Length: 183
Image (cartoon, rainbow, N blue to C red; front, top):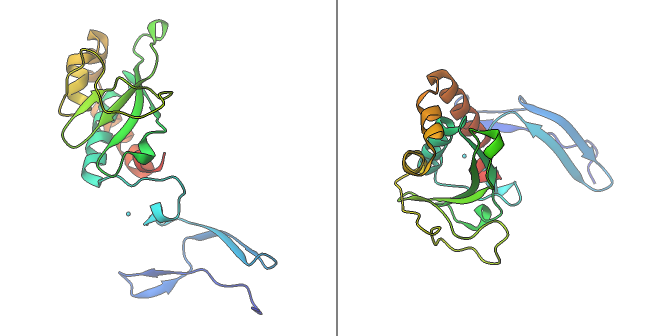
């Protein structure tokens, strides 16, 4: 038995010391021998501690976040249940064009890999996941290029009228949240 509650600390490599800084909302349940806490420091092994996460290759994930930021005023993005099992090199999410709220379509399944981006034939409710492209859909090198060919004139126009500061703000937010790895 412990006589005192355990202390949560973390190693700071740059300072070569253990510290309790950034450990918040500490709760120790003596009966169950459990500890809960929050930390203000990001760890690239957080996926080991978050159920249902699927860490993605950082370069591909980062590039996709830039494309999503550019398209953020023209499209809605939503998580997909298929993403968690897609592996580290593939990102699966849903998207729909949202320039004209009166003509908003249904969400479609988007597949992004280091080699291509495409809209898939299967959807969120399909029994099995398959990377077969939707009828008439080509492969594109990335999400941004897909919009240039597949998106409506309004979606393309909206993309090119994006302000740099807005794009970078959305990108920074997506990068910090790492939605592709943790949704």
